[in-house]
Amino acid sequence: MKYIITEEQLKGINKTIIKLIDTEGILKAIDVVGDFDTLKELLGNYEIPRQLKIDTIKEFMSQRAATGFHLGEFDEEPIPYFENNDGYHQIEFLGPSKAIINVWGGYNGQTDKGEYGVSYKDLPEKSLDDIIEMIINHY
Image (cartoon, rainbow, N blue to C red; front, top):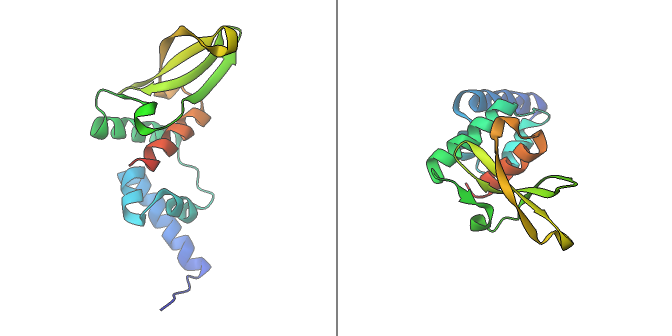
């Protein structure tokens, strides 16, 4: 049997899901609706608050990878951070409270020029979104 959801019902579902996210978090909301794509569909234009993204990353890290993990462990490519005269900066490791940024430079970007940590709260929105998407894909 096929059910048709009215626009009014969809608005009610949207409000319920937003309330669930606000009270229980993104990961719990995904458990309830089934997957991230469905969650995004139900949220419509709702933008997940920055602090909630940060809290979700930290929650995931405490549940699944308390000491952190290299993105390659999830078969994920490094997440671009920025590029300047020093080289190409990219997120390659996620720790419990910060992302580890590796800097690559030299000929064809093949020289490892070191690394440094950046607190999740200091990452740009795009980096947070990329981390959230990766976490959700592997949740």
